[in-house]
Image 1 (cartoon, rainbow, N blue to C red):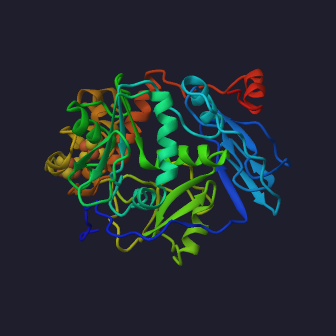
Image 2: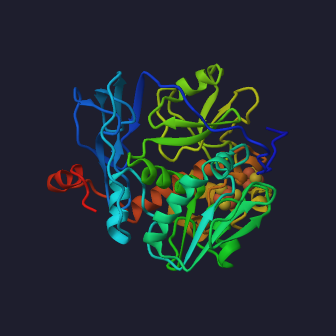
Length: 401
Ligand code: SF4
Ligand code: SF4
């Protein structure tokens, strides 16, 4: 990775293409409760799980088939030639009924709340990811339908579209365009908030008077409003091409379609090279929020080690949150998780730059994510609980709107 380029400029991208149909779909069950069982047959668009908590969208089968396997983590659907479930009439109301309808249609609605400022983030999340460009160029109508729906819930007084200077960022009606430096990590949400609001927002927190959606989120909402069909696809950059991919499509299938052979020791990363997560195996399916597939070859990517921290300070010099990743990684390494809070671990926006620049090649982002996870457990934070049987019955019917 010595010649790695941090530029967020995407240049001219080609049209969005639709990825091939896989024979099997592996849907992640993280944050959702299944409502069907092994052996059940589904149509494309059948609801297979309801989202836990108030924000997580329900999960629908992208294609028709039979559920052949299910465990705590995922559901496997063997695809057949069955058809699609009937489309729904898009919700004509605004506010909470529309929010609930979108959730029932598979949209994660955590960013949909009343706020004075709505920020649309069109800055690529990582180098090499260009999913927003074809959406802003070719799917204007879908984005406008998404924005209309979002405005009915958020009711913003001001709208900003943030783009990397040099990339496409055509304004929508009553929207101000703001440009940022086209260099990673300018597109990460905390830095976009800082650019627009002139205030620092703790990563993962939700400011009272502002909310932020990516152009990809807007497209997802627009597509649901336009088609009346649930959200069952994601837009991903794979090998420089942007594709519409069915949720649950296995990583290995996508790599093979792109002509890449994954060798032992290579890593297939869901997302980009700096903050993506390595797939557990090539059978893992992509999620609704996966925006890229990056293949990291064993011989060309940096091998991380459990070397001691040298105290050289290189990670600190590159940290956009101005914290001490080396010290936090030492706390995590020796299980002193609460001590990591004294080093402001919660200000970390998980950009991955510290790990990239670490002289000792320590897995700094992984240490930080581990410490955050352990701290959440210590604080008694629980994932939203599964809905009761009555709630499931209510949520598997049509959401009144
Ligand atoms: S990942 Fe590392 S460099 Fe990025 S904000 Fe967190 S501590 Fe700083
Ligand atoms: S760059 Fe690596 S070795 Fe240097 S202080 Fe940071 S963690 Fe320690």
